Length: 254
Length: 254
Image (cartoon, rainbow over all chains, first blue to last red; front, top):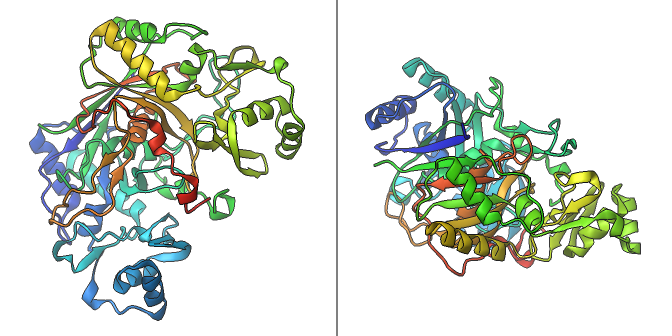
């Protein structure tokens, strides 16, 4: 049997509000769609709805920008209140050039604007920040889904991200539960019997990218995908998406 | 109908030799597998088999390392002949540190060892280089598949690649035909009617990553995947994967 992976978009998820029971809403949408959840399925959930359900939204009229935020706002042409939120979400500034503000977030991700999202939050007077602890968010979702359906799925929280060297954005994993985000192939032999030297595949990022093909954060409002048939992943109860962050001191490009 | 994408691994492709008719071999394998190719399907083909079919293989006993290659070999602990091949494939050295040699290839990709692959080439006395012109390789495959099956598919040539900032490798697109590698969503409105500011999705990379979930370059020998059901892509007869290379002068990390 040829390996086969199916990526299904979950439709009919309403706009998410703070304190919504996300696991329940997702499971109900899946049921309405007639999709049967199975053990080993992987659920990819866009961070946008996780942030909203967790209330990771900041009202800009309640933000008082610091002097530093004002200086960076001047340098980048951004709203000083938004820069203030970005700085609060960051542990380190990695690049500040032209209109770009790239920081390392509290979680350790290096990304533009610390992942602070100005779109998709109602009114235009608020911004969404990344979930406080995306691994923990994934873990909670997974546990609740198990309670609701009896099925043991893996959960990936995804975000759209730019990257150095290459144009365009792709979806990556910022939180995981029940799946080791890296697939170690170092010990394997290639077709001619040579030992593969360096081959650690960032499968959680690849799964997030595969999910993006059906996830339309904006145009269709499909914030969740189910991935079926991917059997290679290693189940890991203590997995963390932080394993995907290259420590800055080991990065050749920083 | 919920959006749904199916990724199918193509089995039974034999070890590829120089001058093999790759399109024919792939089409026959697909037919044997009972999969029906349709207009709009996307074929993701691992660069390894393209390089082999095109004879992009260098015998190391025929390589005479230059002085520069010897110096870099000393610095990185690599075989001077392999470094010589890497330098021939490169237009610029981007990073030389510890055992890492990262260059910009003739095509404009920035990657480790100019994509020169020491595994998966028989005998251990040869190395494989990237296809000379991966867009052209994709174009030829696409044309030949059209002739053989009558179907208008898109073709992506993929490679496994490390990346700055993040651990692990993912599959990316190094050649495309019939598909615009970027999906422009700048003009779209988000769920609340705001204009999305910057959103250009590198769908060719995401499709390559989705394909990697079924492609096992080494362990199973599945070098080709068919992606069905992805309707969002823009057909582009003149597309090039070079659009995915961020010009070095515009890169914040180089």
